[in-house]
Amino acid sequence: MNIIVADYSGFCFGVERAIKIVEETSDKGGRVYTLGPIIHNPQLVKKLEEKGVNVKKSVEDVEKDDVVVIRSHGIPKQHMDKLKDNKISVVDATCPFVTRAQRQVSILSSSGYFLVVFGEKEHPEVKGIVSYANNGFVVVENSDEVERYVGFHDKIGVVAQTTQNKAKFDMVVDALKSKCNELKIVNTICNATDQRQEAAKKVALISDIMYVIGGKNSGNTTRLYEICKDICPKVFHIETKDEIDKSDLIGVENIGITAGASTPKFLIDEVIEFLKEVEHAG
Ligand code: SF4
Image (cartoon, rainbow, N blue to C red; front, side, top):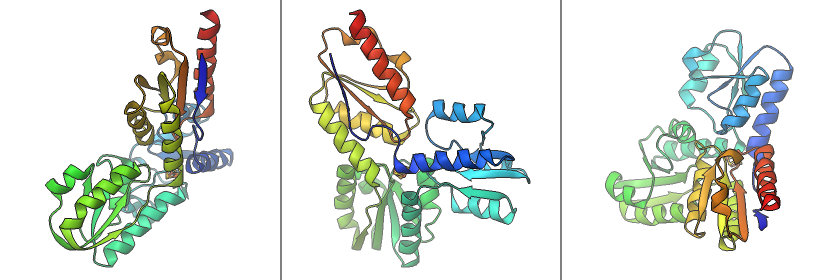
Protein backbone atom coordinates (compact mmCIF):
# COMPACT_ATOMS: atom_id res chain seq x y z
CA MET A 1 0.00 0.00 0.00
CA ASN A 2 1.30 3.47 -0.85
CA ILE A 3 0.26 6.30 1.45
CA ILE A 4 0.39 9.61 -0.39
CA VAL A 5 -0.03 12.74 1.70
CA ALA A 6 -1.00 15.88 -0.23
CA ASP A 7 1.21 18.95 0.09
CA TYR A 8 -0.12 21.65 2.38
CA SER A 9 -2.19 19.16 4.42
CA GLY A 10 -3.14 20.62 7.78
CA PHE A 11 -2.69 23.96 9.49
CA CYS A 12 -2.54 27.10 7.39
CA PHE A 13 -0.80 30.30 8.36
CA GLY A 14 -3.97 31.90 9.80
CA VAL A 15 -4.83 28.95 12.02
CA GLU A 16 -1.29 28.51 13.30
CA ARG A 17 -1.20 32.20 14.10
CA ALA A 18 -4.57 32.09 15.92
CA ILE A 19 -3.56 29.12 18.07
CA LYS A 20 -0.25 30.78 18.95
CA ILE A 21 -2.13 33.92 19.99
CA VAL A 22 -4.54 31.91 22.18
CA GLU A 23 -1.72 30.00 23.84
CA GLU A 24 0.32 33.13 24.50
CA THR A 25 -2.75 34.89 25.92
CA SER A 26 -3.58 31.93 28.13
CA ASP A 27 0.02 31.78 29.42
CA LYS A 28 -0.39 35.34 30.70
CA GLY A 29 -3.20 34.14 32.99
CA GLY A 30 -6.69 35.50 33.55
CA ARG A 31 -10.06 34.20 32.37
CA VAL A 32 -9.36 33.58 28.72
CA TYR A 33 -12.20 32.66 26.36
CA THR A 34 -12.64 32.40 22.64
CA LEU A 35 -15.81 33.76 21.10
CA GLY A 36 -17.03 30.68 19.26
CA PRO A 37 -14.49 27.92 18.58
CA ILE A 38 -11.07 29.42 17.71
CA ILE A 39 -10.93 27.11 14.67
CA HIS A 40 -13.31 24.53 13.25
CA ASN A 41 -11.72 21.47 14.78
CA PRO A 42 -13.45 19.86 17.79
CA GLN A 43 -10.37 17.84 18.87
CA LEU A 44 -8.15 20.94 19.03
CA VAL A 45 -10.85 22.97 20.81
CA LYS A 46 -11.08 20.18 23.41
CA LYS A 47 -7.30 20.32 23.98
CA LEU A 48 -7.51 24.07 24.56
CA GLU A 49 -10.37 23.53 27.04
CA GLU A 50 -8.13 21.15 28.97
CA LYS A 51 -5.68 24.05 29.27
CA GLY A 52 -8.44 26.29 30.64
CA VAL A 53 -9.39 28.18 27.45
CA ASN A 54 -13.16 27.77 27.07
CA VAL A 55 -15.58 28.84 24.39
CA LYS A 56 -18.23 31.51 24.93
CA LYS A 57 -21.10 31.05 22.51
CA SER A 58 -22.15 34.67 22.19
CA VAL A 59 -21.07 38.18 22.97
CA GLU A 60 -23.92 38.39 25.55
CA ASP A 61 -22.19 35.68 27.63
CA VAL A 62 -18.98 37.70 28.01
CA GLU A 63 -18.36 39.09 31.51
CA LYS A 64 -16.48 42.17 32.60
CA ASP A 65 -13.12 40.60 33.51
CA ASP A 66 -12.96 38.08 30.68
CA VAL A 67 -10.20 38.20 28.11
CA VAL A 68 -11.73 37.39 24.73
CA VAL A 69 -9.71 36.04 21.83
CA ILE A 70 -11.37 36.55 18.44
CA ARG A 71 -11.28 33.42 16.28
CA SER A 72 -9.37 33.10 12.99
CA HIS A 73 -12.49 33.64 10.89
CA GLY A 74 -13.57 36.82 12.64
CA ILE A 75 -16.81 38.02 14.19
CA PRO A 76 -19.52 40.45 13.03
CA LYS A 77 -18.71 44.15 13.34
CA GLN A 78 -21.60 44.75 15.79
CA HIS A 79 -20.15 42.13 18.15
CA MET A 80 -16.70 43.69 18.01
CA ASP A 81 -18.25 47.13 18.66
CA LYS A 82 -20.19 45.75 21.61
CA LEU A 83 -17.06 44.23 23.18
CA LYS A 84 -15.26 47.54 22.79
CA ASP A 85 -18.21 49.54 24.17
CA ASN A 86 -18.28 47.25 27.21
CA LYS A 87 -14.51 47.76 27.61
CA ILE A 88 -13.80 44.03 27.37
CA SER A 89 -10.19 43.05 26.91
CA VAL A 90 -10.02 41.78 23.31
CA VAL A 91 -7.15 39.94 21.60
CA ASP A 92 -7.82 39.78 17.88
CA ALA A 93 -6.67 36.57 16.19
CA THR A 94 -8.70 37.16 13.03
CA CYS A 95 -6.68 35.91 10.05
CA PRO A 96 -5.33 38.82 7.98
CA PHE A 97 -6.97 37.29 4.88
CA VAL A 98 -10.36 37.50 6.59
CA THR A 99 -9.69 41.05 7.77
CA ARG A 100 -8.87 41.89 4.14
CA ALA A 101 -12.22 40.45 2.98
CA GLN A 102 -14.07 42.48 5.65
CA ARG A 103 -12.19 45.63 4.61
CA GLN A 104 -12.94 45.07 0.91
CA VAL A 105 -16.64 44.73 1.69
CA SER A 106 -16.56 47.94 3.64
CA ILE A 107 -14.80 49.78 0.78
CA LEU A 108 -17.16 48.40 -1.89
CA SER A 109 -20.23 49.27 0.18
CA SER A 110 -19.07 52.80 0.86
CA SER A 111 -18.38 53.22 -2.86
CA GLY A 112 -22.03 52.46 -3.65
CA TYR A 113 -21.75 48.81 -4.73
CA PHE A 114 -24.48 46.33 -3.88
CA LEU A 115 -22.61 43.40 -2.39
CA VAL A 116 -22.72 39.75 -3.42
CA VAL A 117 -20.82 37.33 -1.20
CA PHE A 118 -20.10 33.86 -2.54
CA GLY A 119 -20.09 31.58 0.50
CA GLU A 120 -22.03 29.51 2.99
CA LYS A 121 -24.93 31.55 4.40
CA GLU A 122 -24.61 30.13 7.90
CA HIS A 123 -20.81 30.16 8.16
CA PRO A 124 -19.48 32.44 10.92
CA GLU A 125 -16.89 33.96 8.59
CA VAL A 126 -19.60 34.93 6.09
CA LYS A 127 -21.76 36.41 8.84
CA GLY A 128 -18.74 38.47 9.87
CA ILE A 129 -17.95 39.60 6.33
CA VAL A 130 -21.50 40.74 5.48
CA SER A 131 -21.71 42.78 8.68
CA TYR A 132 -19.39 45.27 6.94
CA ALA A 133 -21.87 45.77 4.06
CA ASN A 134 -23.94 48.89 4.57
CA ASN A 135 -25.40 49.21 1.09
CA GLY A 136 -27.37 45.96 0.76
CA PHE A 137 -26.06 42.44 0.21
CA VAL A 138 -26.95 38.89 -0.82
CA VAL A 139 -25.08 35.69 0.01
CA VAL A 140 -25.10 33.07 -2.74
CA GLU A 141 -23.87 29.51 -2.43
CA ASN A 142 -23.60 28.83 -6.19
CA SER A 143 -24.23 30.40 -9.60
CA ASP A 144 -27.85 29.10 -9.72
CA GLU A 145 -28.60 31.22 -6.66
CA VAL A 146 -27.44 34.30 -8.55
CA GLU A 147 -30.33 33.79 -10.94
CA ARG A 148 -32.75 33.24 -8.09
CA TYR A 149 -31.73 35.82 -5.50
CA VAL A 150 -29.82 38.66 -7.16
CA GLY A 151 -31.88 41.45 -8.72
CA PHE A 152 -30.56 44.06 -11.18
CA HIS A 153 -28.30 46.73 -9.65
CA ASP A 154 -26.32 49.53 -11.26
CA LYS A 155 -23.11 48.54 -9.47
CA ILE A 156 -22.38 45.12 -7.95
CA GLY A 157 -19.27 44.18 -5.99
CA VAL A 158 -18.51 40.49 -5.50
CA VAL A 159 -16.23 38.83 -2.96
CA ALA A 160 -15.84 35.25 -1.71
CA GLN A 161 -15.60 33.52 1.62
CA THR A 162 -11.83 32.99 1.98
CA THR A 163 -12.04 29.19 1.77
CA GLN A 164 -14.22 28.90 -1.33
CA ASN A 165 -13.47 27.09 -4.55
CA LYS A 166 -12.02 29.40 -7.25
CA ALA A 167 -13.70 27.61 -10.18
CA LYS A 168 -17.12 28.03 -8.54
CA PHE A 169 -16.36 31.66 -7.73
CA ASP A 170 -15.67 32.22 -11.45
CA MET A 171 -19.09 30.72 -12.28
CA VAL A 172 -20.76 33.10 -9.83
CA VAL A 173 -18.88 36.02 -11.39
CA ASP A 174 -20.05 34.97 -14.89
CA ALA A 175 -23.66 34.73 -13.73
CA LEU A 176 -23.45 38.23 -12.23
CA LYS A 177 -22.41 39.89 -15.50
CA SER A 178 -26.02 40.21 -16.68
CA LYS A 179 -27.19 41.53 -13.32
CA CYS A 180 -25.57 44.97 -13.36
CA ASN A 181 -24.05 47.78 -15.39
CA GLU A 182 -20.77 47.60 -13.51
CA LEU A 183 -19.24 44.56 -11.82
CA LYS A 184 -16.32 44.90 -9.45
CA ILE A 185 -14.66 41.54 -8.69
CA VAL A 186 -12.46 41.17 -5.64
CA ASN A 187 -11.07 37.66 -5.26
CA THR A 188 -10.78 37.22 -1.50
CA ILE A 189 -10.05 33.48 -1.57
CA CYS A 190 -6.85 32.99 0.41
CA ASN A 191 -3.64 31.38 -0.89
CA ALA A 192 -3.83 28.57 1.64
CA THR A 193 -7.17 27.46 0.20
CA ASP A 194 -5.96 27.48 -3.41
CA GLN A 195 -2.77 25.60 -2.53
CA ARG A 196 -4.63 22.90 -0.55
CA GLN A 197 -7.25 22.39 -3.22
CA GLU A 198 -4.71 22.07 -6.06
CA ALA A 199 -2.51 19.68 -4.06
CA ALA A 200 -5.54 17.58 -3.05
CA LYS A 201 -6.62 17.30 -6.72
CA LYS A 202 -3.20 15.93 -7.70
CA VAL A 203 -3.36 13.24 -5.01
CA ALA A 204 -6.99 12.37 -5.79
CA LEU A 205 -6.00 11.68 -9.41
CA ILE A 206 -3.60 8.89 -8.43
CA SER A 207 -5.44 7.42 -5.41
CA ASP A 208 -7.80 4.42 -5.21
CA ILE A 209 -9.18 5.67 -1.93
CA MET A 210 -8.78 8.97 -0.15
CA TYR A 211 -9.22 10.24 3.40
CA VAL A 212 -9.90 13.93 3.92
CA ILE A 213 -9.19 14.69 7.56
CA GLY A 214 -10.82 17.58 9.40
CA GLY A 215 -13.75 18.87 11.43
CA LYS A 216 -17.17 18.03 10.05
CA ASN A 217 -17.95 21.69 10.79
CA SER A 218 -14.94 22.88 8.79
CA GLY A 219 -15.94 24.56 5.52
CA ASN A 220 -12.53 24.27 3.92
CA THR A 221 -12.27 20.55 4.76
CA THR A 222 -15.73 19.93 3.31
CA ARG A 223 -14.65 21.70 0.11
CA LEU A 224 -11.54 19.48 -0.13
CA TYR A 225 -13.81 16.46 0.29
CA GLU A 226 -16.12 17.66 -2.50
CA ILE A 227 -13.22 18.34 -4.87
CA CYS A 228 -11.63 14.92 -4.25
CA LYS A 229 -15.00 13.16 -4.56
CA ASP A 230 -15.31 14.40 -8.15
CA ILE A 231 -11.96 12.82 -9.04
CA CYS A 232 -11.28 9.78 -6.84
CA PRO A 233 -13.70 6.80 -6.76
CA LYS A 234 -13.79 6.39 -2.95
CA VAL A 235 -13.42 9.40 -0.65
CA PHE A 236 -14.17 9.71 3.08
CA HIS A 237 -14.34 12.85 5.23
CA ILE A 238 -13.13 11.78 8.68
CA GLU A 239 -12.26 13.64 11.87
CA THR A 240 -10.11 10.87 13.41
CA LYS A 241 -8.64 7.47 12.58
CA ASP A 242 -11.51 5.82 14.50
CA GLU A 243 -13.82 6.46 11.55
CA ILE A 244 -11.74 4.33 9.15
CA ASP A 245 -13.38 1.05 8.22
CA LYS A 246 -10.59 -1.46 7.53
CA SER A 247 -12.75 -3.35 5.03
CA ASP A 248 -12.57 -0.32 2.71
CA LEU A 249 -8.83 -0.92 2.38
CA ILE A 250 -8.99 -4.45 1.01
CA GLY A 251 -7.24 -4.65 -2.36
CA VAL A 252 -6.32 -0.97 -2.30
CA GLU A 253 -2.93 0.11 -3.65
CA ASN A 254 -2.75 3.91 -3.39
CA ILE A 255 -4.23 5.71 -0.39
CA GLY A 256 -4.42 9.48 -0.59
CA ILE A 257 -4.55 11.76 2.41
CA THR A 258 -5.28 15.43 2.72
CA ALA A 259 -6.41 17.59 5.61
CA GLY A 260 -8.14 20.91 6.06
CA ALA A 261 -6.42 24.11 7.12
CA SER A 262 -7.74 23.65 10.66
CA THR A 263 -6.63 20.04 11.15
CA PRO A 264 -3.85 19.57 13.73
CA LYS A 265 -0.80 17.52 12.75
CA PHE A 266 -1.38 14.93 15.49
CA LEU A 267 -4.67 13.86 13.88
CA ILE A 268 -3.00 13.44 10.46
CA ASP A 269 -0.14 11.46 12.04
CA GLU A 270 -2.60 9.17 13.85
CA VAL A 271 -4.34 8.34 10.55
CA ILE A 272 -1.01 7.58 8.84
CA GLU A 273 0.10 5.39 11.76
CA PHE A 274 -3.21 3.53 11.71
CA LEU A 275 -2.94 2.85 7.97
CA LYS A 276 0.62 1.56 8.39
CA GLU A 277 -0.55 -0.78 11.15
CA VAL A 278 -3.33 -2.11 8.93
CA GLU A 279 -0.79 -2.74 6.19
CA HIS A 280 1.54 -4.63 8.54
CA ALA A 281 -1.30 -6.66 10.00
CA GLY A 282 -2.49 -7.56 6.48
S1 SF4 B 1 -7.87 29.20 5.53
FE1 SF4 B 1 -6.99 31.12 4.74
S2 SF4 B 1 -8.33 32.70 5.57
FE2 SF4 B 1 -8.74 30.86 6.76
S3 SF4 B 1 -7.37 31.04 8.50
FE3 SF4 B 1 -6.28 29.88 6.94
S4 SF4 B 1 -5.04 31.41 5.83
FE4 SF4 B 1 -6.63 32.49 6.98
